[in-house]
Length: 202
Image (cartoon, rainbow, N blue to C red; front, side, top):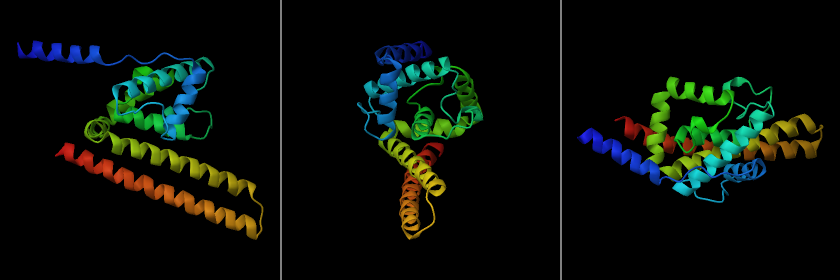
C-alpha cells in the first residue's frame, strides 16, 4: 500500500515537471553560452530553468552528433583534440548536479555519462543531493569553473602569441593574476559544495 502511494507520488511529481523546451540548434547554442557565463534566460534552480537547459542540451547535442562531433569535449576523451570550453565544463557540472540527464545527450556522450553515473555514483549522488538544498552554491561552482577555463585558455593563447618585450611580459603577468584569482574562486566554491556533500554523507 505504502509502496503504491510512493509510486503514485513520484509519477505525479514527474507529470508536473515541465518537459524539456524544444528549440533549434542556433538558439540552443546561445542558451548554453549564456548559461556558462551565469546570464541564462531562466533560473537553473527553477523547474522552468532546468527545462530550458535540458532542451538546449538536447538540441545542441543532436546537432553536434549529426555533424560527427563528440560533445561535450571532455566526454570519453574522444573530442578530437578540441580544447575544453566553458560551456563543456558548465554542462558537465549541470549533469553531475542532476540539472540535465544522460538521456538529453546524443551519440557517444550518452553512454559515457551513463558509465560515469555508475562508476562515480557516490560522488555524483552527493552532488545531486547537495544541489537540492544548495542549488545556488552549485551554480556558483559552475560559473567559477567556467570562468577559470576561460581565463586559462586566454593565458595559453597569450603565451603562444605574445613576443618578448616588457609590454608582453606585463600583459602575461596580469592575465596570470586573473587566472589565479579565477582558480581561487573555483576552489572556494568547490569547498562550499564539498561541505554540503559531506553533510549528506553523514
